[in-house]
Length: 548
Image (tube, rainbow, N blue to C red; front, side):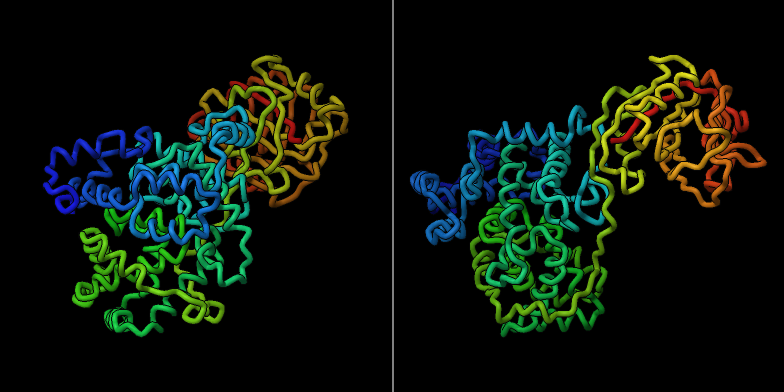
C-alpha cells in the first residue's frame, strides 16, 4: 500500500519512528504504548494504513471540514469518514462533529469536577464508580484497553462526571469502553465535553423514532435489549446465505447466537478487532451511530464464515472468532463488507421481537458524593462513600456537618448532649462514628440527635447500627423494644437486652461495650475486640454528624 503511494517500501525502523512521532496525536499521558503495539498486526501495517488515509483525507480537506458549520448532514464528510480519517485529525474533527466550544473546555470541566467531587480527590474513592453496568471493577468492565494507570483513573473520573449529566441511565456497558478508547486521542477535558454533547443529543431522541436508530444503542439498556434481538432477527431475514448457515451451525452445536452478538457489542469489539481496525470502527461509530455495530458484526461473520463453520465445540466459539477477527488484514475489503449490510425499518421491526436477557443489570448503588462541613479524623474519603452507600434511601443524597469531635472538644459525654440539644442541630438526622484502639469503626444512625431531656429509655422514629471497618454492613431494628436509647449522666446506652447493650459508651468516652443484639440482629460491633478482650473496647475517637 505504502509502496503504491510513494514508490518505495516503508521499513520497520521508519514505521516505529512514525508511531512514536508527535504526528500520531494519541494522548500519551493516558496511553500504554506497549498495549497498543500488542494490539497491532504489525507497526508497519498500521503506519502504512494511516499514510493511505492521509493520501485521501488531505490537510486541505481537514481544514474544509473544520470551517464547515455542521458536519451531521454532510455527505462529503460521510464519504471521507468511510474511506478513513487519519488519527492525527481525530481530536479536532471529533470536537467539531459534536460542536464543542474549545475555548471553554477546561473551565466547564473544572466547574463540573468541583460540583461533583467537592473537596475530595477522586482517587480516594477506589472502585466506587457509576460504571452503569453489571460488573464491579474497571478491569471487569474493560478487560481489554490501552490505558495506563492515569488513563484508568481518568476514565473513572469521567464516569462520575458523565453520570451527573444524565443520572438515570440504567445500564450502559458501551460507555466505559467508549471513554477508555477516546482517551487515546483526547485529554479528559476534551473527552468529557464531546461525550456530554453526544449523551444529551442521544438521550433526547424519541424512543419511537425508528428513523433515528443510529442513536439508540449507545446509552439505554431497554433499547439495548431490543436492538440486540433486532439485529439477530434482521440477520436471519436477510437474503445472504452467510447468516442462515452460521445460525444453523450454531444451533447444531448448541451455541446461543445472542451471546456472541452481545459480547461483540458490549465489548465495543475491543477483544475482536486489531487496533488499526478499531480506530476506524471507533470514528465511524461516533459519526454514524449504532448501525456500525450491526454492520461490523455482520462483516466479521461473513469474513470468517468458513472458519466458524469448522468449529465443532461450542465452548471455543468466542475464543476462535476473537483470534481470527484480530488476524484480518485487508482493511478496505473488511469495511466494504461493513457497508454492504443494510439496516432498515423493514428488516428491523424490533418492537415485535421477543427480548431475551443474557446480561442483567444489578441494582445501582449510591452514586452521590457527600460534602462534609468540617474534617473527619476517623473517616477516609472511601469510607465516607461506603457509609453513604448503606444509608437509608431518604438520606443518601444529604450532606453533613461535624457537630462533635472528641479530638477537638474533649472526652465528655456531657458535651455530646450539649451539642445535640443545640437548636441548630437537634432537628436533623444524625449519625455517630466510633473508632476503637483496635481501629474498628462502627456507629449508629438516628432520625434525631441524642436527647438528654427524655426521661429514661425512648424510641427514635428511626435507628440503626452499622459497622464500617473491618467490613461494611448496616443493622436495622428487627425486634423492636421500649429500651432503645437511654441518655444518662454516666453513660449512653442503645438497645439494652438481658445479655447486655448493643452499644454503650461511658461518660469519659474512654470505654465502651457492645454485645450481640437480638434487637438489631447485630454482632459485637467491636469486631477486633470480640475475639480478644470480650465485649468491652477502648475508645480512640468519637464523632457526631448531622445530615441536612
